[in-house]
Length: 185
Image (cartoon, rainbow, N blue to C red):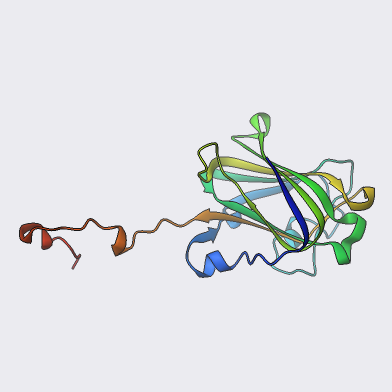
């Protein structure tokens, strides 16, 4: 289950939001980090600015913990990385883990990035190829480019699918008696 990403990324994490297919649910979670330099923490990781970033300050693996108050359906995670600006601070290998709490996390995706610049899209699917349902996601930075020690991550988006309840999904009534229920007044 290794996802390999190289160079310039053109994934727009906002397209699905604008199209109404996903919604960003990171604001419904409690975020924590394994370590951070003062002024380079969760606030910078979630501030919508590509100019700010989280910077770890400790031994690897560096961890981003995302805990939800209720079980959530998660379709993907989008991570903004910029090798041109961050060089040896840029993550090279990530492990995405999910579970109910810290003690039962299991790896659901491994991502290898080669000099990424832009949004890295990581789909999160269960064994049935459906979006995962979880209370917690952990992003572990296993290694950095050029054997760097600390890491920079500029932004993380967590997307949940939006259920489509359009008229196209409504039953197609064929009899005259039932056709009165075809629309809601």
